[in-house]
Image (cartoon, rainbow over all chains, first blue to last red; front, side, top):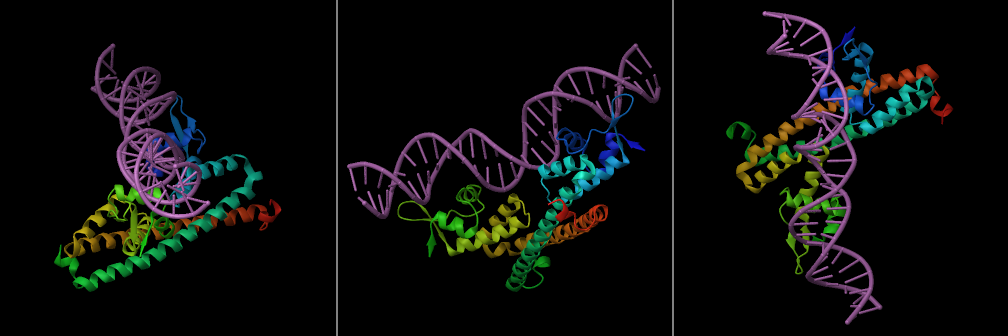
Length: 127
Length: 127
DNA sequence: GGTTGACCTGGAGCGCGCTCCAGCTTCTAC
DNA sequence: GTAGAAGCTGGAGCGCGCTCCAGGTCAACC
């Protein structure tokens, strides 16, 4: 099964421009082309895009994604390096979550304060 | 107690340039000036900067921080609006944490896979 | 065979959040 | 009185991650 770029964009949640951009910067391999020269994305291509968007969602910079993509292209020999990148990134994500949770506590505190100042139902009162 | 810009930068964890930038874009009020025209940050200024950096850490865009800062300048009348901004933001942060946690699961899965492919101690083997 | 619409390429532009710079003033220490 | 450090202003520049555009090709449909 292959997909035209519009369909691949729809399925990956990325824009058409972003798909072409990712190709230009060598984050993804150039997909196959159909008889008239148009991109034809495979299921594998989409799976890889799906993984990339996870990395992006977790804040991995494109440079590092490119590095990971490059290693992936080298096959099994680079498994160790790829694993280390992911482990490091996992640590980063965990730290980020902790950071966000700490800030959540501060937001809670601030919001409670606003409650105390104006009464619990300020929200309705000023709506 | 007041602080010169270098000291304020050190204490807030922001750069000197960023402090001046925040002032320019009206995210913070212009701090007091000493007798020779240099900025003299107060403890209150630093507390506000501290809160702003929490908002920044949690990904609030500067535009919204500015809006919040503007409302803060209006005093008690804007408490309801400010509270709603923080509540909305808190929801966003919670959603972001959930998203990150979901991605963590995928990272775990990928890393485990690498373990399975190459043996648990790839890390040592390829170090 | 003309029009429409999806896709192509190379390259420019953009919004964000800073960061850096030139050229100047002011204070402190020697 | 001079050197050096710290700060000032207005404005330019930058890295990131897209996003948009002009001008062209190609296949499909009326």
